[in-house]
Amino acid sequence: MIERRSPDVVMTLERLGSLHQSRLSFMRQLTRRIAREGWSFHTHAFNIDANGVGHAVYTAKGPERLYSLVAFAHDLPPELRSDRVIATAWDATFTLFDGVPTVADIERLSQNIPLQEAGRVSESELTVSRANRSVRLWDHCVEALASGNQPDPAQLDAVGYLMRTTAVYGSGKLGAADREVIANRPEMQAPFQAEMLTVYLIRWFVRDLIEHMARSKGGEAAVKLDRVIAARLGIGNSTGLGMAPFIVNHPVLFNNWIMAREEAIARVRSVERASPDEIACFNDLVARAEKSVQAWYSEHPIQIEKLAELGADIATLLQRLKGFDFHSERPWDALWNWAENHLTSEGQEWLASLMLEPYGELVDGLGTCMADSHTQANIVDGSMPVSELLSLIEQSFGWALDVDWNAPEHTAMAWYVSEEKLEPRLGNRFEEPIAAYEQPLAPARDAADAYRKAQAFGRDETTADFLTRHPDCRHTVRRAQMARFAPYAEIRSNTIAHDILPINMLRAKLSFFGVTHFDPRSDRWVRVCMYAGAPYPAELSAQNCEHWIYPEAAS
Image 1 (cartoon, helix red, strand yellow):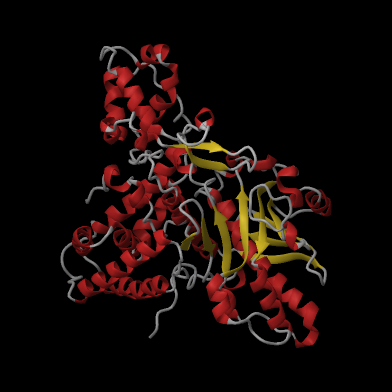
Image 2 (tube, rainbow, N blue to C red):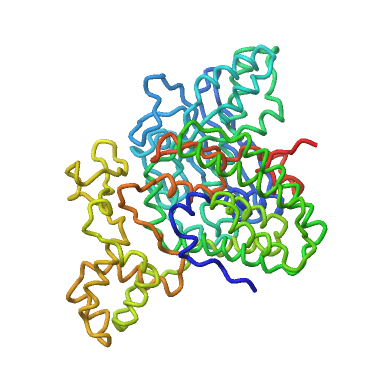
């Protein structure tokens, strides 16, 4: 059996910023389950007026439970439209209700969901979300459909969505159900399944809403959105620095995501012989994935450079595949070993995701391992000898022990929360008075400090002895001890260096959601699209639930 790659290779920010969606991505786990279990979907209510104001309820029925998206559509003045977290009004607001809401539930939710942070919800609600229209494209689509025409495909492809969410909250936010309430439900065991279901149902609502507004405007002359065009549209999302600290603050959870992916890659590399069907599947999806990359556009220099790297890597890979012997022993391992010497990290991770595609039986079960079930992970083992503690720090932070943490370039940046915008920020501690407000998002610096202090203790002294003298090191000890079962918990890069690129942290997390076509607008925020290409609920089947993420290649 091929071993998983070392965390020292996988967990650098440069590598994490090159990850792509895969079979294990959360959106694909959801559509696969829905199709396999034969979920049914029903429009429970659609009470929207000609101005696009009102509410709708969409219900998804699984084997054991029902979930309902409750959507509120608003007539939002342009001057109030904002994607910032401090916004107070949106074009649409949503909640995922546990079951089917009653009339009383709808009334209660109508007084709270449109207010978002200013409202309150109950344990019956699993998520809270909001979205804004892509205004010019929305108006163009309404006008076109109302007059009996389809919208311009070029305009649609340039944006990719008619609405974009600005937040999809779960896990207890605003009073919604805590993760523990749903964690043991089979359909919710994988991470972020409630959030992914929310967005999937929002996409259905958005299509219905725009067709409704077109009918209200055009009457009998109006037409529905062409099914092929509708399928290409996803739900947009604007994500900034608020997401970046997540992978630092949830080390065990992020470890589980990475470990599952690395285990999947190792399993496929260990396959002794590839069958003709597996080879054909891989080659087909390489062609389709290449088409997706060709349609991936960005104006940001960071992404332009990465796309150039990926394009060159794909050309190199395609040339190699022409003469590659898939019938040899362990062909995927041979292909991977070649890739490590000939492709950039961007191309390597693109290839890794594609190698998993023919092997659902080997890979898909790992999705149930990706949640954080280590309820005791935060408990410090005070009986641990200092010698073992030092060893664990070396294991996770060995690279950081040689860094000169007194050098300004290694500590230039500080994470803090803006009082005005209520959003995470990253600033230069030597240029702004922010050091006093720094968030604990520099585990490598803190680990090096704890290591230096622990070296002054006897090897047989205990961690409790150490923490009695240095209680400020408790968080480092806790993280170091997690390495015993979470080897991929720690980033092997400096999160406060002068040249830190937070966009790499955003992409790492979003790749596990399953998004494609990352479009950075700076090194600190990105626009993405979710569910583009996915079948709508009524059309989802075992035949189309899996590879919708890849566009059809030209024949």
